[in-house]
Image 1 (cartoon, rainbow, N blue to C red):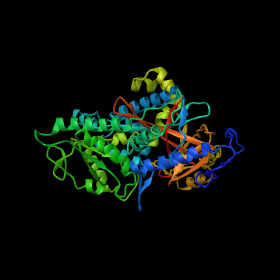
Image 2 (tube, rainbow, N blue to C red):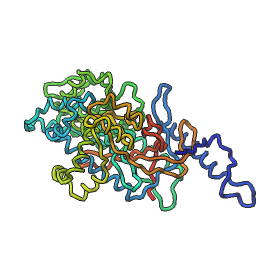
Image 3 (cartoon, rainbow, N blue to C red):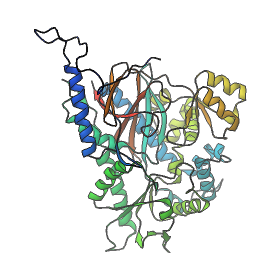
Image 4 (cartoon, rainbow, N blue to C red):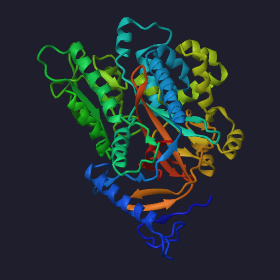
Length: 486
């Protein structure tokens, strides 16, 4: 695949153009000058508004697109509908561990974070027992803030890549970047940007949950509600998180950043209220704890089990987090393809919406259930090797996928390839203050869904070179993008 890239800053200011200046033999440099001016203005705004990532050397502006992705309003609406349906299914599944755990019993022996969650929940909800009123009440202490990622295939159909109900980030950053783009006079006649209100909607969800928890459990005069956002000790996405936390604070909730090790110093009171530095905690918002690390010790999992039965709201709790696993996606997809009527009846979803979901799911196979020869055939057909870990670096194709077969985890998957639409227009990106033009890119759209009703909570749009496997901004070479409705 050929890809042409040219740095704007290094290009001549007298390129060949199709629009010569009137009365002159010299062809216009206006489009290029405009691109250079735009990149300079946007780069300044990224610094002014602290839209970026934290590195060892300090703030680094987030890489961005200067070429919005153009979608039809109906296409964007369909992505929103899919996110709503998936969010409602995940919320319902999380509220019923006795249904969820048997569905995911393939994780029982898996030495992964989803596997550990499964075993922890099984210890709380033994098999073949009914949920008591107490455990039902604690199960309801789950707050869903999901991001559902989709690719548009070459038949103009959305395909479900994965969902993330834990550490579902980058929406606030994308929201604020959209505001930057809207000030640059990029609007075309009869075109407008897709709305991205991630900051206000997500903050409202979190604040209202904390306030409700405080009203239910705190005594009079206990002070403003407290939300703990649990983050990595060396968090690089701090600026995105701060946009959200500032808005939560504006809505009357005290916000404190804590690491896992700091959280483990909390104490449980006799009434099962969690106290951090002697203050009752109303909401724990997890932005870490989803991949193996030195912090996920046996003590951590004992603490998580205790939290499940404590009087504190979590975003998400363990069951909610488990519904974001690729293993849940694998099993839900199998149900939709084999018995859509069962899914319709269990979740109360009408047949038209079930058909919409079925169109969007991508078949997958558990590597452990395949002979090596069969797995190699699927890899040769372009299947993606996906582990249960989240974030960049966990998708492999071709030889890299074959190499993983020798040390496969019991929950590893091979997922059918998605032949995504390749954007052929000249695409301008801005990275480290340098603008570059290229062709052949793929965009991925993440739609946020909020709460049990899975209401729209903004979007994250990322665009990467078509040759790249990974579509992350942190890793994978993608840039933050915006959506223009045409």
